[in-house]
Amino acid sequence: MPAQPLLLVPGLMCDHAAWDPVVPWLAGVADCRVVDHGRADSLVDMARQVLADAPARFSLAGHSMGARVALEVVRLAPERVIRVAVLDSGYRPRAEGAAGEAEAAGRHALLAVAQAHGVRAMAAEWAKGMVAPHRLTDERLITAILDMFERKDVDHFAAQIRALLARADLASVLAGLDVPTLVLCGREDGWAPIAQHEAMHALAPRSRLVVIDRAGHMAPMEEPAAVAAALSQWLASKE
Image 1 (cartoon, rainbow, N blue to C red):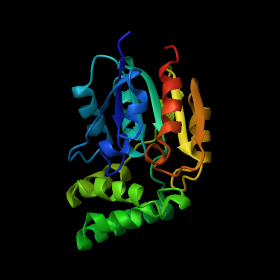
Image 2 (tube, rainbow, N blue to C red; image 1 turned 90 degrees about the vertical axis):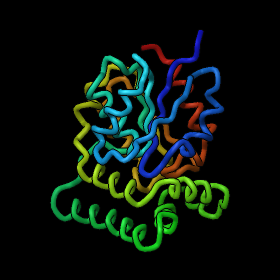
Image 3 (cartoon, rainbow, N blue to C red; image 1 turned 30 degrees about the vertical axis):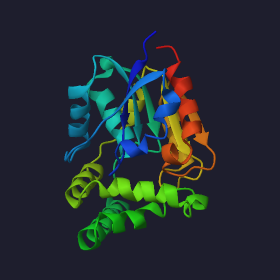
Image 4 (tube, one colour; image 1 turned 90 degrees about the horizontal axis):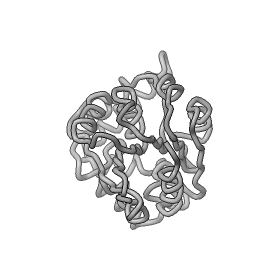
């Protein structure tokens, strides 16, 4: 049996490097392809780009912002998606009032760092809260994250911030999923905590929740073998 097509959708300022550690573990199980968001500044436009280059039917896994893009793909073309995986992400829109303004201010503060000091300097600040604490001294991991961010420029960052701040409520998409669904997060993900994934699991009728020990928000880079094991089980699930 030929390997099934699997589209891997990266998150904010991420590229193939976010998924590269996982892909070898899926050899023979899936024909993996990492998508690129270009300079799109809306999650819906990112989803349309995915669909424009995708096979007729495919499995779809998204990480962080990429998981929101994956769910927008499902919203646009549910008949083309065989199964969906949501990793280290969320489903709610930006909050109204003070909480939403605080989120926007925090994101724009990082953008200001990138504009003033470069994307790598911004990424160094960003990474502090995005991996499990014990990995902060892992020079190889942190360098891979910083190199990945530096491959994109400030305009990419600004576009993706606009996309995230204008994100839609995805509760109805999750509740309407009628395909095998994986909801996965790192146990030490402080940005998208376990409770958020438990809520998504409760909404999605055919979902399985997996929590990866010793991983933070960048679970596919931090614990690729464990993430790949969960993905392999999901890929083997019947439609």
